[in-house]
Image (cartoon, rainbow over all chains, first blue to last red):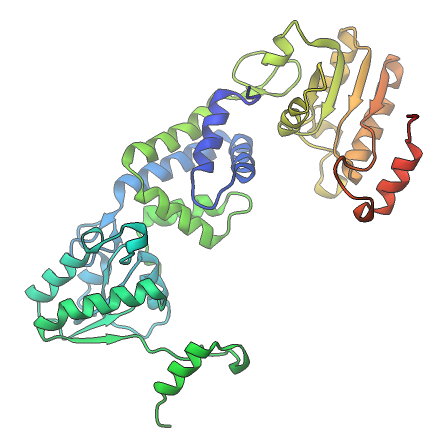
Length: 199
Length: 199
């Protein structure tokens, strides 16, 4: 038997179905929503529907946008001959924040992961190949995460891109700026040594 | 400059305004909502509105309910002469789970907290007094949390209830069942010693 009203239980269930939210947190969030003024609750509900119905993938780069083509793909101040391949929309944000890159992006929406049954057809690979085939692309930068799956995806893509005679590069590995050699792991240190540059 | 569509930013802001949800978690939750089928997003939005508009406080005990009177207050199998005073609706759930108590409840919706500007008029104290004055109540059990604010609230209430000549009790303090003496703090141990019972 449950001692919360049915609609409150439903809301708790909904919160608990979100990733990383347990039952106790879901309760806390649901109680918070109940304690808010009605307009706040309505604004939250509306925000969910507006984001879910209004946001879709850019026809070109697959990044999230409310328009047909995202602001980066639509900009004539960006270098459309360089494509940076990332796995998630949030990675675009990370790279943009570094203010170093002026090309365009391609968002895969995932990485190859046989363990989780994610194959080449489940992520936006064919859109990337189509794009490289159709337009004048000079360089494709692989910016997937430096973990096993990100690496495997980058390797797989670079092999697929070979026939197009486009330059394929990978983000540099090395010690993070501002960190401490003492805490760098062996793999990172050996990659940093391997990729050393002249001063 | 933000690189997410406006409606996505709005949804992230909404999630980030919930208690205990930081900016990164809010992003993750918003992306999750976008990745869900449309019906799921709609069900979530509807759950928020239905809970917010459908749930209110029981006219008698102030617990959350969708009806005028909650199922516990409406039940004739409960002892309406005993009122257990708790600070939050979730505390009712905790006590019900113990399957020991058969009386009714009174939910204060908070505790006295001068630091947070919560005074006697901000929690449901006058409703409790009215209830004790109007009906035949034999015992009021204080089941606020065993912390400073819960203690102070219980003390304050017991003083207010004195003129009604009703028995006022407090949940027993002592060592938790299944725990270890080694880990019990001094205050708990001394309370357990004080409240020892004959075997």
